[in-house]
Image (tube, rainbow, N blue to C red; front, top):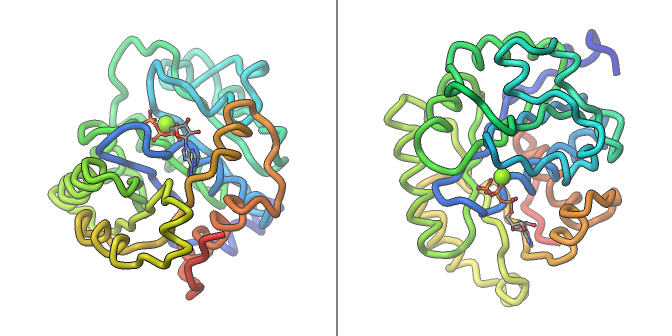
Length: 255
Ligand SMILES: Nc1ncnc2c1ncn2[C@@H]1O[C@H](COP(=O)(O)OP(=O)(O)OP(=O)(O)O)[C@@H](O)[C@H]1O
Ligand SMILES: [Mg+2]
């Protein structure tokens, strides 16, 4: 897809930030799933990983051997944008700028803002994989993103922290957030325990956009950079979430 074509179909939610209060809830997993889902639909996708010192996307995208430059190099002027972008072998439309291994200074909001604005004309979707917590990720999201997905598991502590995230975003005047509940136990889904999901939605205070099952296979594949097939259920679910992000009225799917 050419840049010109891309620009005709730009989503109003072109830049999507994945955030959470608590760590380890599945932001990076969702980042790869959504990115792959979009890429399989022909969108040109860029994932940007912000977790300084805690890189993980390179492994999940199968690019750990070929990454030379990262977000820190780009922000500190050691490389050009094109050198910092790595194409994933999972899909030719899927690209990433990975997190800095070391970053001497804290990321400056103005630099990220300029970077994201400069990248908008070149990608159909830019997904920001944020660090957990309410500090930097709230500031960057409020400044640069069109939509935030608050990721939580059904765990009560994660839910409470997800609620804190929703409030922190709102305090900065950012109200365009939705909820993704990850690692939902299959038995729950089969038993159709919607009230439990309702409690999570109420606890976070954000509108539900997607539910992902706990799936040991995704963990196994992504940590080894193994390509996910188009019909893998996590990819199918992520594709539906992407279309919901773009405003399509599609029912939630669980498998
Ligand atoms: N739906 C799922 N089913 C099974 N395992 C999952 C699922 N989602 C995530 N995981 C696993 O949970 C762990 C944490 O996931 P991930 O790294 O995506 O979380 P994160 O929110 O990005 O963490 P951090 O806050 O440290 O950046 C990983 O081992 C991942 O494989
Ligand atoms: Mg992560």
